[in-house]
Length: 229
Image (cartoon, rainbow, N blue to C red; front, side, top):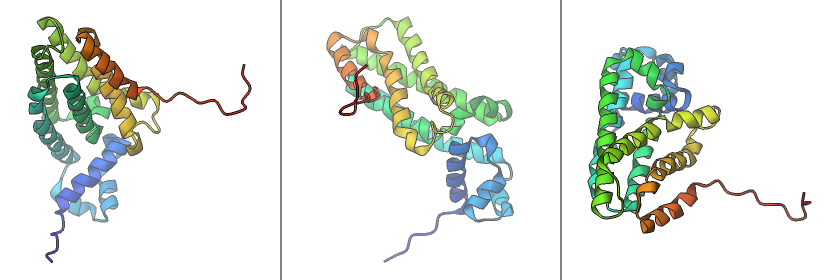
């Protein structure tokens, strides 16, 4: 049996940096901490990434590739179920590189490569969500004027871009931890999908409302024998 080749050091550095950036925020993680996490010397890390911005850019390129693999699927959406799946796939990719959005303003203030890249990524997402709306309208699932569709696609991108910051503001100690991924992702996708409701035809609107009930927090159950007020 052939043995797997060990991962290259650069790949291991990216993996460790992504995990630390996502958990603690890029400004709060030093290259020395990343090296310590991997058990390598700071000099070894510096050989691969002389500046932390180079590491950030490498992780952003991962994100670009993840988006590039998803966004063309916008053209395959025909109904609410397809839109639901696409939106969840999109917010999953945002979550996987959430440090970019968590610290976006700070990162943009010092990184010109990221500045241009984020602008393109937001543009590409807006185009993709506009395509989703066009496909829904073409299939008869949605009725919307062209100017409203443009505004709606932009609103969905804004919501998805800043949803994790909203989650973080509500619960800074836990919101962006790995165990919160499913709940945070569901809520963000649900809010973005909910913007479709006024424009859907009745049957599709009813189906989306049914799907959105999955995002509602469970109701507290009363313990047996508890006194009633």
